[in-house]
Image 1 (cartoon, rainbow, N blue to C red):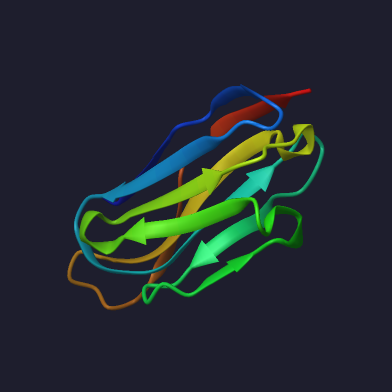
Image 2 (image 1 turned 45 degrees about the vertical axis):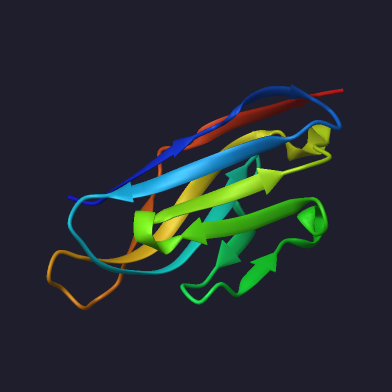
Length: 121
C-alpha cells in the first residue's frame, strides 16, 4: 500500500517562509513525476510546481521566483520551499506522485491527505 504523507504546513506571517515535505512509503517499484497542488476555499485544485525524476521543474506563474521544488529520489521525498509568502498563498497543499507500486511497471497517481498553509497579512 503506497502512501504519501505531507508535513510542514502551518500559520505564518506574510513575507516569511515555510518548507513542505512529502514522503512516499510502501512497496514502490519506481517514482516518476512528483508535484504540489493547492486548493483554496471555494476554488479548484491547481498546480503549484512539478518535478520529473530527472529534476526538470515547472511552476505556476504565481509562484515563480518565490517557490522551489526539489526531491530526494533515494528517500522518495519531494519538498516545496516557499519564500516571500503572500496571503493569497493560503490554501490546502496536496502532494502528488506518479508511482509504480510493488512489482508493477504501470504508473498510478497518488495524492497526500493535504496540509494547511495559512498566510496572515
